[in-house]
Image (cartoon, rainbow, N blue to C red):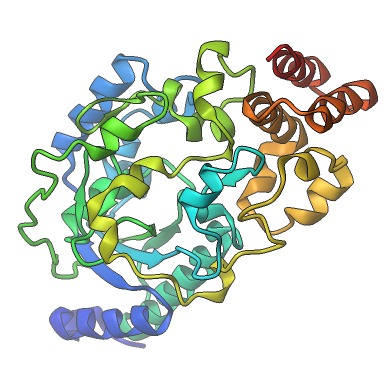
Length: 356
């Protein structure tokens, strides 16, 4: 059985980075667990109500910003990132300019990242444990109250931009994050990374719903990603027109960020475009029945919003599309044949689209 006391942690960290690279991660860093500045920002954000209906953002109190309260004895957090921009998808600007197409956030075109990254991180953690002996750890991929961007910033993976996403000066922001909380006292890799957003406000200026209400502050209640994914009820009518043809998520702030000129397409085939959904016709998507929805989104993060919210989002997009007879008939046919939970919510959005 390995003895942790006889292990050179500097050498171990080099080995962990090599294992991470072999597992498909583009970068790995280690941070301590002190997040008081980020905790203050989170508390101010919650106090302003910017989390909307995401009650889970405040449900766990300080566990989100104090890792040792979430997992006892945690003293280090290993953060990793993995590129996700699929190399085989239609250009985002082309889809956004085609009002009859449905735009889906580029991260959701492939396999569910939770499954892909969690499996890789778990194997990485098991390799570390095999090397050092029994250790306390837990793996997270957007699955618990974790300030992942703050931890990744502390680990030296980048800086948090004005749109609140993490930016890496060599890789932009098209990547996923994951963490291993551990009681292993690894050397921290925190380096002094300057914020390179400067005077740029491209992300703020381009936001269709003006959700970035101040630098580094997003009002989720106005964010299209929140409206199409997190919100369970009716989308506020005042925001529907600005949503355009975005039916699952929104990438506008990342598309506008000049640092993404350095982003590289992913080589991870799990994130390549599936089914394909990168430039599908809105009417075709709207005509799916629930069985088709479940089959064609199997293994995709899209499935988690459910069929009713899928129809809700597409109904809004059809209301923003050119008002052709085909669009009108698709809306009328779906309304007449609806037999699902949340029928009233979907019908409301169909009626809004028909009035357009």
